[in-house]
Image 1 (spheres, one colour):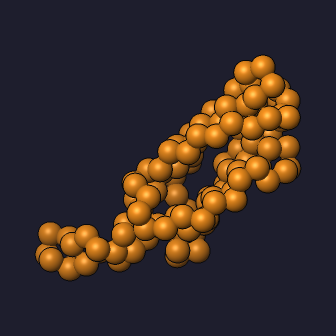
Image 2 (spheres, helix red, strand yellow; image 1 turned 60 degrees about the vertical axis):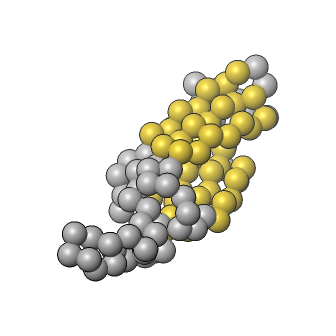
Length: 103
């Protein structure tokens, strides 16, 4: 299981701004370590963001995403106090889910 995500969700008028910082090494499988051996691939494959139990984004990622990826999105129709849930799963079937509420 990875480190906790930093999630911010703020309501601005009728739009909610959601900003997510996911902590993950995101290895491509092409980098070599100090001994010259390939570092095995290890990266987030899917990200699901839900607001008040409704999925607002279901993204498939690959090896080209940088270390500690940042995701920002805008959602309409959410209310102050609604729960925001973010779940990622990587290629080693490790998963992480974190939540916050809309401020």
